[in-house]
Length: 162
Image 1: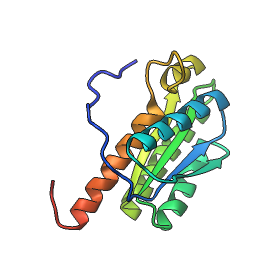
Image 2 (image 1 turned 180 degrees about the vertical axis):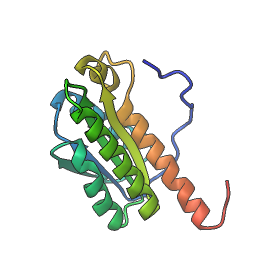
Image 3 (image 1 turned 60 degrees about the horizontal axis):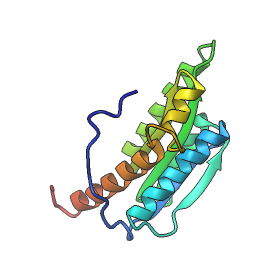
Image 4 (image 1 turned 45 degrees about the horizontal axis):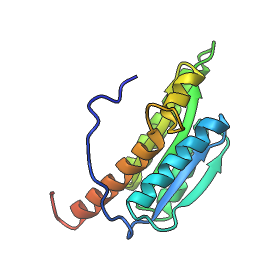
């Protein structure tokens, strides 16, 4: 498990951002941890009233993220988990969700927090879900990255480079 090399940054005030979460429903325990982690980040970054939308699975994340971005949200945090099985389904879903979320970010110039866990085992997912005993909090990390990116996009659009 990585985690090494992660940037250290202090939360900044993001109360002026419109933020949404789109979260898959598969693997309830992992997803509850990811959503809770995102909510912890929102509290730390002073985000007011983030919207949370649930979808069936990871494959559905991009289309709902696009709908939210189209509604003017400054940041959309996409949370999901895909656990490898014995068929190519894992690769198809992971690639489609990743490519789709990238497309949403670029097409809408919207910060997308990438919180899609792609794991070989359920234990790996639990270790990243931000639960008690987890080694990482990917929900928090995805939300934090989306918020900082959204602030950066706002500055760039206003003509600032830093």
